[in-house]
Image (tube, rainbow, N blue to C red):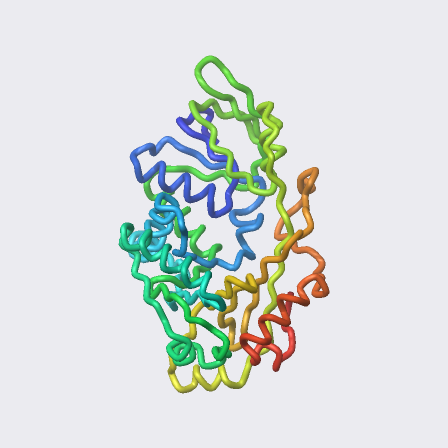
Length: 320
């Protein structure tokens, strides 16, 4: 392991590996990443991988646009499949106020150069035949949007970073970080690294990493659930007929997303008051960890999803 580097990135999820890749891309090849377990073993490995181009902020919208463009080029650059499914993203509007918000957003999107299409309820039905559209005002669609496989993306970014001279140390735990007059010393269980800069991308360990340098980071993770159903005959039929995937469906008013998954459907609700987790940080052995499901908490979202997509309630639950 190197004893000196320009930058040390702490954390080998998609954010940390992306930081490493982009530093190397900008010409800082003397950069290293330290990960306590395996790459993606935190929250990255089971993330849903959605890529919402929709954003009311001009600057954040630019970041989303850059990311979508990057994912299209990354496979060619690294030879690694990033699992990018460009299936479009449809945001439903059940009220006039929501549609007004979409019109306001369209102005932001136009200045960024993001393609947005306005859809009537009938057009939504044509694209998403399983969707109940009678009570919709309309929707917007991002044709260039979709979803990605976060673990595949991380490995592609890691390959790209290594190809440009960056180094990645897996199964290496950061024990402490000390500031010096010239920068930092990052102490690990495999030795110490002197560096000019440290970038903390430690995810669920963010508070513990912050404490190492005297920072109280005001962020707590919360539990997010998603439900995957058994295959549905209508979706399987569409696949056999060679019809395109129906894309990511988002109900902004009921606050959930839905898309196809292995012939069935995946539903990800955004619940109010989701329980905090890892308040004191994960255990030192935490790796590829999941929580016990609690479907009762999601009942209102599930009911809303069944109203909008009745097929969701017609098949069993495969996993939560």
